[in-house]
Image (cartoon, rainbow, N blue to C red; front, side):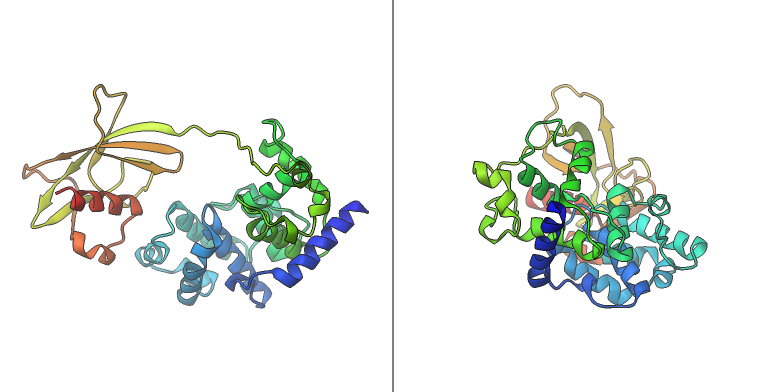
Length: 327
């Protein structure tokens, strides 16, 4: 009974306050599946406000799975440019190819079949199951985790493990409107139970929130340690252009254009020129200008004044900007 009260309160709040987002439009079931797939891939590690214009442009150019399967790879990367984590869009296309080939152009509704697709883990499979197929799943994204941690006042390290949070989320119950309920919980975290200064006076379930009773909204996280890595990056410059090469060496930014570089293992007296963070990697980079005429394999020369003409990862652009500002 208590679960039903919580569910009803959250759904009532959502019906009145939900944002108008392009992937929430009323469309056919097939389009809804496609919109959900694309938006969930884009929303991995990216905020809603940043995703909206990318989603709109993507759908305008690639309106369905069949178009995605046959879409030019370079143009596809260009559409994604700026969202980062490019493995997502590569996996999105691989998933589209499998769905068209093996599932008669329809996303599989089975959770384990969804999870078997490239780039789809527990969270994304749960989100698609709930939103696209109205199945009783509560996806545990950062917004829902925040609501859960505060509502139940989960602070200790064992309480905030993924495993325990999956157990504790049953406090929210389930709803027949599973698609709306999953989005309602996410929306509650995004609009009300914000990381800083939550709007408790507008929260539909604040009466039973333990964090509100204790006046303690601090969120504890399991600390993830970034790996320190060291790189020597070489700069070749000719006619005011920089040389970049296709990355076939490193696992990050695979097949993208980067500056020639090599990893150094525990170097002594390493004086970094700049630091860049990629995922859980803390990259310490030393820059060395090379004036020899020797060229790296598969060279490509880029004009720093016209970066928009190239398909480059943000990592490479940051290096270019650093070099241009430290002439």
